[in-house]
Length: 216
Image 1 (cartoon, rainbow, N blue to C red):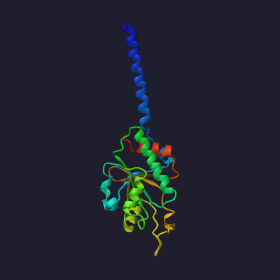
Image 2: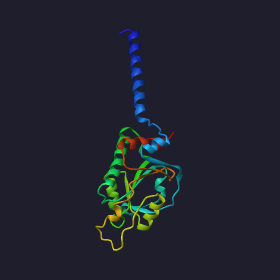
Image 3: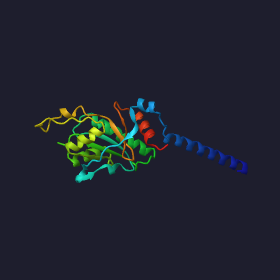
Image 4: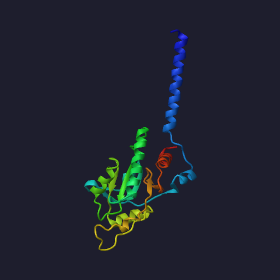
């Protein structure tokens, strides 16, 4: 093989590597969406991030969580409950698939987390709700706050939570059935920046999430 042929082959290989690199970069680099595009895709972004007060909720083994859990991480928060027949499993599965897709594309998940807060503290213990969350993804966190703390968090985050009737039986669920089904987004500074609204579309959710959390 003469020298010219070797040079030609080397150039062809370098060209193929460059094309492949550009293709991979296109697949892994999110497209930044405008505010109207975000809204069409089901995400409402606040004009200014919202502050909210500290809280104390419990996860497995009664470990206390407060606002420090948000530091340095993008956090998705979902208010649901373990006996939820439909909406909660759909939302949690959506987030599970989001994580799986990001992981398969090589995205860093160390600065991302998901928190499930039960709206049924009368029946969901910290251990039960944490186990429920981890059934979708082992990194997910489930937590329970007492009723006053839950109402405080929900009010500040614009989540509708209905108090149970007095003398409620353990199988009573009517107060839980019309809960808010939004998925909330907290930035690494611990500020409430927006929320994803149903009906959820997996492809739009992935595209929108990547656009919002990726540094520009």
